[in-house]
Length: 452
Length: 175
Image (tube, rainbow over all chains, first blue to last red; front, side, top):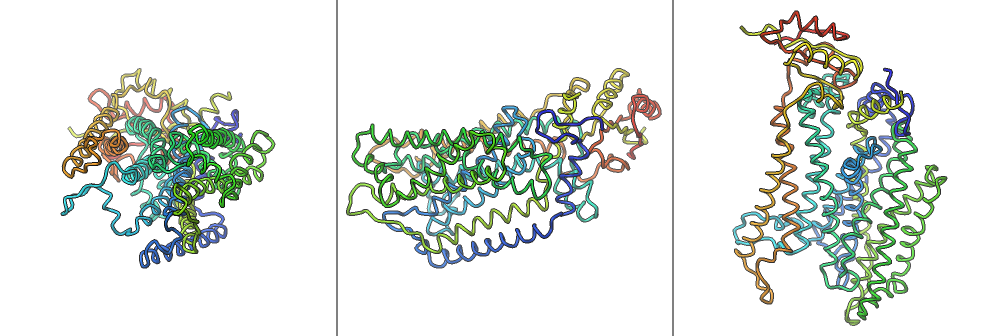
């Protein structure tokens, strides 16, 4: 092939459509680095076992095994729900919004981040259902023809969440699967054994790269991206409204929806970097997920970090300007109250740590970047903890104040969902192409043309 | 008379040679052509014009229908099981917007994917092109043009035209 890439730093010099196909399809077909994969997968799968045990115990004993009580009835379940669903948002942002903005650097990372979205949403979705108290009746949230003549309360944010999260999961899955079809066909045609060829052949539905199909496909993919873009904004806005619609001081604020969306993209990019940096090192994908990709993601993360910092500032400014004694008390209580340690740790992780990303030396240093991303992962978890717990534990009447203490089962459920998330990612890397070969081929050919 | 083959399949190494060949075949009046490529080739429509795809219209209609139905469902639910909160109106439409929006998007997305499957006749696990020995490369790194037999163009002339257009290999597909 005379077409080579390398002009824009989005693909290493010398990449051709053959090399892209060979490198990417080798991972699911040959299963390299088996020792790494098995160790990682088994460790994560242990987490799944912990999750199953925790969920079983919740079904047996009820949500009382968690540390939730009056006045803090939300606790880890909602903190983790918001954290996980926020992580998912970067995937949709990368695959949909950057596609619409013609940002070609999304090409090599969109498949992986879409998978991350799906798995994060799977973890997120568990929490509100478990938190219902009687999780076996979760379907009461759906409008189904029940014998009691009842309807879900459509004015309730819990019902909005049900529709938002299930729509988000379904549309993300469709978008991901439609994007996978041509790549599954490649795996079908490269598979060494008839069995594998058959399985991938069934999954790709008989894709054959026909021009007419591409014609419909391109249009569908573009419109799905156009639908996913407002969807991702709506999902975290609705999560923000779960809080903002309550009259609780510290929650009842119009800044919540946009500030939650910015926080979601911020934490999502941090998680993408956390996963992509080891992935590309282990599987030798540095030719496709280049240093320039990491640099660009770090810049998006910095921008979102500043938006989030503005959100914190605006919360305090709003509390002060409201003149409301309870609003003001919650703001001060965050700074110096019993959970002040969490608050200042969050400031260090979410406001201070991203400032290192102004320096290109940090953005180009994978270890430093990984450290910043980890700090942000932690910081965004702390942010949700601070929002949920500080507002609830001291609201209006001091006689109903209290403290929140997480229990063993809170931590085990959280560890369990991390295990579930990582197990699904390990399975994804092992059996499906982690980089969109189709889109990489088009990119490599285009770059080659521009370079000659 | 039933044609003796599905068509003649020509293989091309690069995007450039493939696009040139498409142009040449079009100029020579071959109008029953299908292509098989490893990615959606930019600029293919200029050489090989296609009918506009109905997917956009279908998704628009499905989205609007889904949205209206979702709003109607909530409006109906508010009347079927009225909850009087301090005399507030039952049709509290601002609170119905989130679910209306979500179901609009969901209906459009589901309809779009269903339309793709319908238009492509998927799942279809077998097709004459799969019998070509080199067709496996069509999903990897080669570009294929299939010239279907018509009244005006015999198999022989199609074959010659593909070779003249620069095909690396030419195969006859079984019917």
